[in-house]
Length: 354
Image 1 (cartoon, one colour):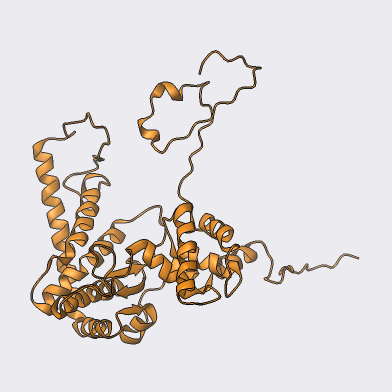
Image 2 (image 1 turned 135 degrees about the vertical axis):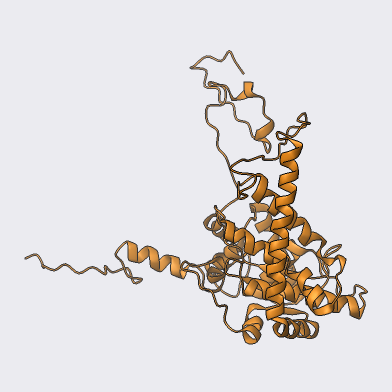
């Protein structure tokens, strides 16, 4: 890569998915002077990518109606995932012999991309189905009454993929920062399924394995990475990807303190969750029986049983954008620019010039 003259007109371009393992010699000045990071798109980027693929489909409404709502519904999706959602929606509409693609087709496509293929003919006993219903109801109800939990979109007990017997789908906000209170509420919501099994059914199952794995990673990160523990202090020990790193950068005594703090934090969150489940036992039973009857519940069904969620966000959430598009964002932008939605100025001059 060396030896080119400054007037030879040679441009060297390169790309990688693993910038962390590049040799430092490649990054010296004069070799690759411009480094451009292409991350996963945010909600605005996803909306523009959806527009590209939606223009090729026959839709019930204009493409912007779907692109704004689907962008809010697909946090973390890359361009390939968005293309997959649009293709799946078209296939689902074709199987239903519909001439136009609607919101229901897109929602089914997202479910399939996230959770896998539906397996309604999977053999499952009544007892197991009942356990799954109470487990998912525990997630739904505990998240409903926790201030910092993500808003629920739908809850289902239809088996999907290879192992999932049910799932609760949320519309998370793309927060760049998380507070200690937010992580604690998310931990409680994740433990809601196990707590509901214990409180209402009197016995626990292996269905919470994935939940416990998430809780373990989340809690160890709080203690060992983010410095949220008073006993460990303001120290951070992030995991290293270096395969040659064999020893931990802390002593066995510190490791024991980290383990103890993690267990205490998880136990505190579980006690809080069990207390919440005890307070809303009747609600969980109602949601579970409704799930056994309908198999899939949306947020509107939860509102009928639980009432409106007691917490309101000061800013529009991704769920609000899913329901209303970017209307509130547009209104805020127009008001900040001193314009009304019809394009006229909302600020009238006090003195009219002659």
